[in-house]
Image 1: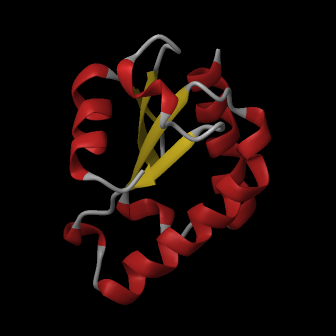
Image 2: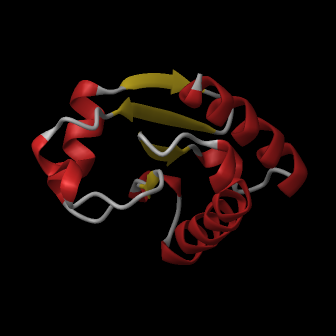
Length: 112
């Protein structure tokens, strides 16, 4: 996802799943929606990191780590899902494997 309106829609209409390291907002869309013809065939992800998490270097490192985790798990999420992740400050110092397990739990909840 790239447009602010897409993020806003997931925040407003989606379901919130809190976790230790981030908050996930998940929205399932239906195939009969008007923009379904222009939608990509797979799930869509977005990552928003507030400035309170840290400076740009910290935020970019978190973003890169989450993108890599999502890239490896894209097949586990249904194609009709839009997911926005809001990392918390604790994700920066966490072990990569621990964050991966936490992300697996959240993705399972979103796609169920």
